[in-house]
Length: 96
Image (cartoon, rainbow, N blue to C red; front, top):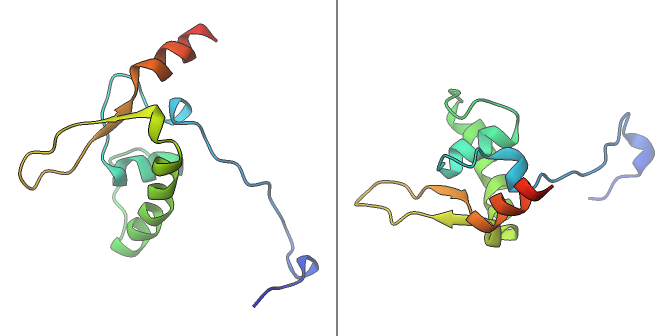
């Protein structure tokens, strides 16, 4: 059910980061690791399952929206996929 804005004490602008601002160009990351980094956490931070699930739910659409900025590995067996920055995005960031 919608709520009037005046029911909220604080409202923030909605800011989404560019992948190049979040990921290190020399590494590949799993979705849960990227989810942590989007929250300003170290990618190895331990989280309870519920928190991790919520962060991953928010991260997947971000990855899809920025799909051209990523490369992904060919997962082996039960290993997760790893995402990294596309070389073109890295080159553009170096030019800035």
